[in-house]
Image 1 (cartoon, rainbow, N blue to C red):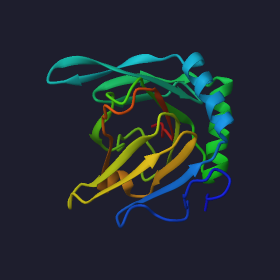
Image 2: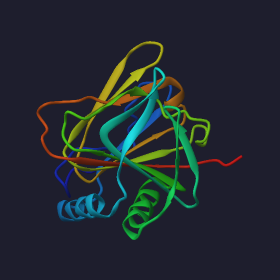
Image 3: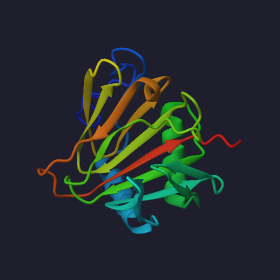
Image 4: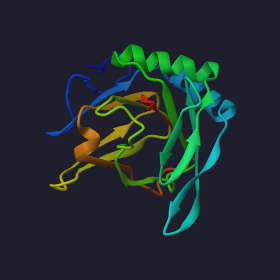
Length: 205
């Protein structure tokens, strides 16, 4: 339980979901200085692009920016748009190793999101694309503005939420994507950027 080093209360052995999945919040796994340094590097060195989604027959370009990296040029399709993974840079490899060490899992790819302010968010969805390892772990690192992150059960509509801190780690695994949706609600209270990295495992045919 992280309670002393960073002053936050997070127990990575406690499942945040009441049933049908596993979500573990590790809290801040980096010091404030380390998290600040990672945020600066990510903003400067990642090849950010505005995200695109195919909705109602039209290609919609979002204010939110994304990037897709991996061990190989994996293709990843969501919202009916396909991305090809870029090769890791040193910063991302460092963060991948940190996520793997903390979670005891391995990952071969990472989807990054850049939210410039709290007005940019993510609607309810689940990461259940066929490209991903079924019931595999997704390690989510957050840097920058603290944002609320919410889950909603697909059948019961029961909701669970957690505040993701600067330099924190959240893990979603087992049947979470099958039974739960998640989202990043927009808020007008946040005026600073947040970078989120979700380390994943792509399974090739």
